[in-house]
Length: 179
Image 1 (cartoon, one colour):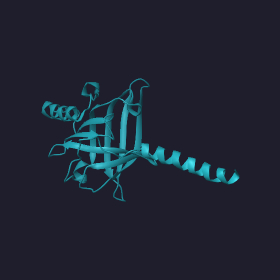
Image 2 (cartoon, helix red, strand yellow):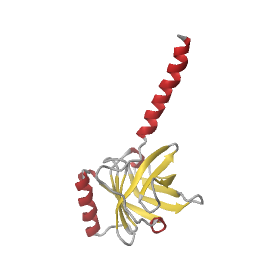
Image 3 (tube, rainbow, N blue to C red):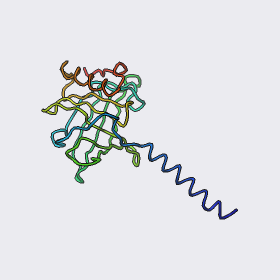
């Protein structure tokens, strides 16, 4: 009986740990593809969040931005910032992103709480790197980003159509105040 406990307890803890870590997926939504021939250096800098699905990390936030810079190890430093209009305070979160496959594929994993990683997939991007559509692991996470506080209607519609075609419920997007 004693030897069974010596095996069962570590095995159970291991299985629970593996299930937890596998839930921290760095997947890409079915049907979506990450931008190829991605130029990370062009993507670096400040982006304004134009729209997103509401989730607890950005709840009640406006004036949200993401700023990307290259770390000395080649990974990408991520600084997200926004104003919580309910608590009337600025919030900031700093994390790190790594390429899942190759730096020329816009498929990354990002972590703000290591060892937990989540997918960050640029699935549409204009040629000048001014407007981007970013998908998370699944259909629960979606962002429309711009280098400016607004986005032209043509890119807004392009991104919305692409997201709808992938199965996103775009009617649930929150349009972020950036004034």
